[in-house]
Image 1 (cartoon, rainbow, N blue to C red):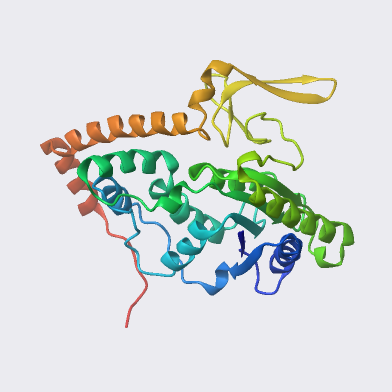
Image 2 (tube, helix red, strand yellow; image 1 turned 45 degrees about the horizontal axis):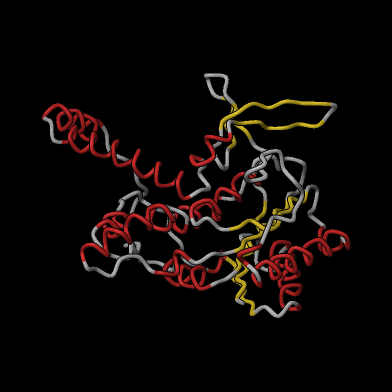
Length: 312
């Protein structure tokens, strides 16, 4: 039972301390633990080159072509039975450092739907296909630490990271006004509890369930919703569409249960998403072959070039 804890905060700061407190709880449950602070790594942002997808769809593993420390941490993430993230809250949301890792570890090359299709294609072609570890069931928990009450978006950011690999979210806590969290005994105890809960889930991943504070969405426990132009309410994490109602101060989110197979957190929903993307990409490829497209792209490329600082 391996639990990997990842901090996106200041080295030896609040996030490091609280994720280590959680690791202490996990270790008490018999977990093998490891800790990484992302600030110590060289991680570059995803460029959207789709080389990973091309690799997967032609029988490869979908490895990223960017040369940095991602392959090292990706191997550790794939090996882990449980993941624990601690992030500082910057302007209501998760910090950019977390987003850089999320784009690399939760993009199409790590999506369960993409890898399911890639595995089928590879088997037909007699090729190796995706790393089997990408299909490993995994538990995840989150700790977010904010210096004020501006923390309303971070939960959605964190839980969206679990969607790609279909990780089971076990527990989560968003701490507000917590610059001095190391001296808050109740908060410290809560972080240790999160580690204990995560380790217990890893012991029986098949029956593991969310044990944190219940959310509004009954599918993913999200409290974040998007109101679109049609008047529909969409859960920001699992993508289910429905309506919000309030009865005696209690909010509920209702939706057509017949649409459950389309939830972004389900394999069927991911396969549907894959098919939608394939149809759209096919249209784009046809468009890119036309003289009109090439002329328009050249117009924008020639219009102005990106400014860069002086180089030696």
